[in-house]
Amino acid sequence: MKLIILDRDGVINYDSDNYIKSVEEFIPLPGSLEAIAALNSAGYRIAIATNQSGISRGYYDIDTLDAMHKKLASELEKVGGHIDYIAYCPHGPDDHCSCRKPLSGMLEKIAQHFDTELSGVPVVGDSLRDLQSAQTVGASPMLVKTGKGERTITKEEGIEGIPVFADLAAAAAHLIEKN
Image 1 (cartoon, rainbow, N blue to C red):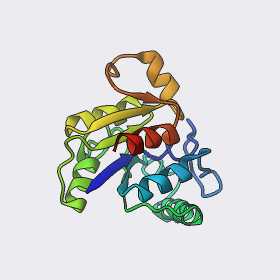
Image 2 (cartoon, rainbow, N blue to C red):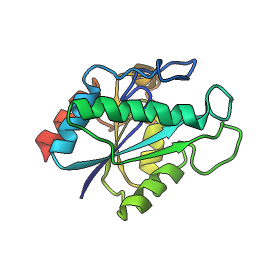
Image 3 (tube, rainbow, N blue to C red):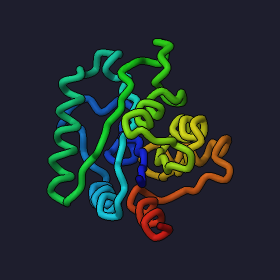
Image 4 (cartoon, rainbow, N blue to C red):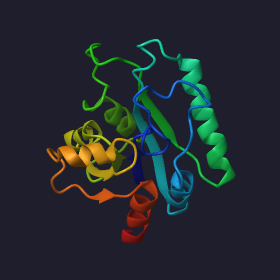
């Protein structure tokens, strides 16, 4: 089975330092939906691992998060794509959970769901915590410049040797061509 794990905000949809708090604010990045559909066509199973601390902060609730993901599914369907599994962490940074990236809980949950090891599985993110989470489980982190990606690059610590792509479409094209 070919599996890829994607961060959500900043990789699939526009991100905001003020959080994506509503369905209206959930806007796919150009080319991201088509990239997911291309990965589907190339035989990839698609999982999302996303920190959603806006829930614990009271900015939105789980029903709103579900509505955002229904919008994503609907928009993907229009271009022939789909998501196979979504893992999210509703906790804040002070909740001491095991799922919030950079910890590996969500990725472990994805591995359990698909009954697979994550060694070498591509994990696409836009922040250092995405990359660290992937490294913790032996996955293959990939950084995109969208979202917080440019900021992550300027920090440069922790990204040595990690491939960097303009966006999800470029990362997907690389993976499809490589396989």
